[in-house]
Each structure stands twice: as structure tokens, then as C-alpha cells.
Length: 357
Picture 1 (tube, rainbow, N blue to C red):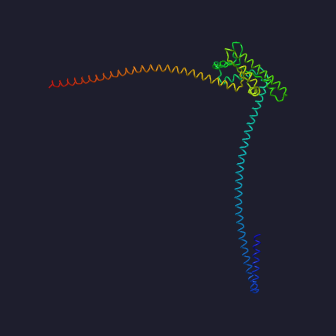
Picture 2: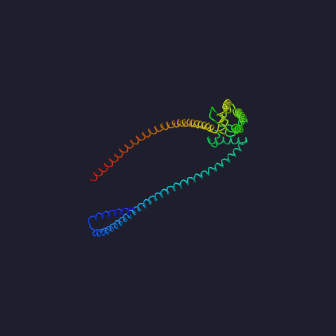
Picture 3: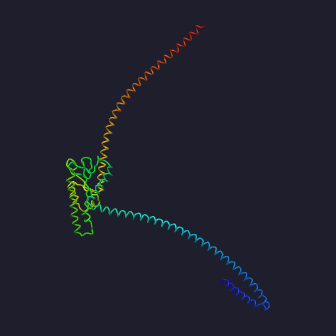
């Protein structure tokens, strides 16, 4: 398009030149000049076309090189972005696989736990099984606080002189004394009482029965395990379920007050651990005080022995000083005798020389 425009301009210029020349010269000269002009014009146009083509070719090559460089840079950046995105995607996919494996493991544990819960529910439906469950739970707490075998601090299935057997007793320091602990698990009416699927009337009846069950347990513990002159004036009712303990303390304060009047303390696993921990600290402090008195007595004895040692050492020191003075005196005497012998020896030698002369 640019070539055509330039050629048109050149043609117009040529025509104007021809018109100007025609006014001043004759036709012969005009024809000659037109021929020369045409030749020159053709050469110039050919040269101009070659220059234009070369320039356009150079510009095209330069533009092509720049385009190739830009495309190469874009391609490299795209490849880098793709590599980064691929690495991120790979990491994300790996994390997803790890999470899925963990979820799968958690699901297996949940399935196992649900099976255990079902088996636990089947166990807790029987009163005897619930009693065994509470006793085992109580034993674990005692062992975890006081150790596996510590008959001086606690005993399991302890028999009192009146023939009653407590699940366990703790020999706390005076004035508390021997404290009996009995495990109770009033579950049937509690489950009905908190079951929202039942009607309000059924839940209220279950609540009344639940209170009756708890009071019976409190009365039994108070009458069996608080023995004047043998046990402390209080006992512990252990509830192996935190939910039961929370229900009684939160919504049935009358049961808590009734237990206090009967000198029976209601404990859950958490509160029982706290109570036993306090008793353990008291026992350790008592042992520490006992050993502290023994250490003090032994130190006093050691002080007496050290006083004797000091007296004997003073006597020995004085004896050593006396012996040392005697040794010094003997040493002086020895020097004097040695000097005397030396002088005698020199006198004898001098006399011998005089006689020989």
C-alpha cells in the first residue's frame, strides 16, 4: 500500500515537471527530456523499490526475531507457572491422600469404638456387671494414686469386724482415720430420666425413682460403713460416671444435702482422684516429718560423738605437742653428744701427733 502511494506521488511530480518544461522548450527537446526523465524515473523507482523492500524485509526480520523472543519468554514463563502449579497440585493431592488415609483410620477407630460402646451398653444393663465395672474403675484410681500394692494406705474388699465388706478403704491420717468407699451405679432410672424421647410424665416418674435409688444407696453406706471407733465418721459413695455426678450436683441439690446429713460424700472419678491426691500429699508430709525428726535425732547423736572426738583430738594434740618437745630436747642432747665425741676425737689425734714427734 505504501509503495502505491509513493509511486503515485512520483508520477504526479513527473507530470508537473513535464508541464513546466513544455512551456519553455520545443517538442524535440521535450521528447528527449521526457525519455531521459523516464529512464531516470524508472531507475529511481527501481532503486526506491529495492530500498523499500530491503527496509521492509529488515523490519520484518527484526519484528520476527522480537516476536520469537517474546513468544519464547512467554513459553518459558508459562512452563514455569505450569511446573509450579503442577508441584502445588501434587503436594495438595499428596496431602489429600494423607488426610484420606487418616480419615480412613479414624473411621476404623470409630467403628471399633461404636462396637465397644455397644458392648459396654450391653454390660451396663446388668446390675452385677455395673458393680464390677465400678469396682474396677475404683481400683484403677487407687493404683494410679497410691501404687499397685500399698496395704498401709488402702485395701480392696476390706472386711470390717461387723462382717460388712467395703469395696475399698483408705487409711487416711488422723483425725480422718479409716474411710470406707463403696461404688454405686444407679443407671436404669437415670437413663429414663434424661431420655427426651419419653414423655414428660414418664421422665418425672423416672426422676422420683432415681432419687429413691440414690437415697437407698446413701442410707446403706451410712449404716454399713460408718462404724464408731473403727472407721471415720464419714464415708464415700463413688459414682463411676461423671454424668451421674454432674446431674446430681446440678439439678438435685436435695440429694447432696441428704448425703451430707448422713455423712456420705458423693464422688465422681475426677473428684475422687482429687481427694486421694490430697490424702497422698498428707501422707507424704507425715512421712517427711517423721523422717525429719529421725534425722534431727541422729544429728544430735552425731553432734555428741563429734564433741567426744574433739575432746580426744585435743588430748592427742597435746600429747603430740609434748612428744614433739621431748623429741626436740632429745635432738638437742644428741647434737651436744655428737659435738663432744667430735672434740674428743680431735684431742686424741692431736696427742698422738705430739708423742710421735
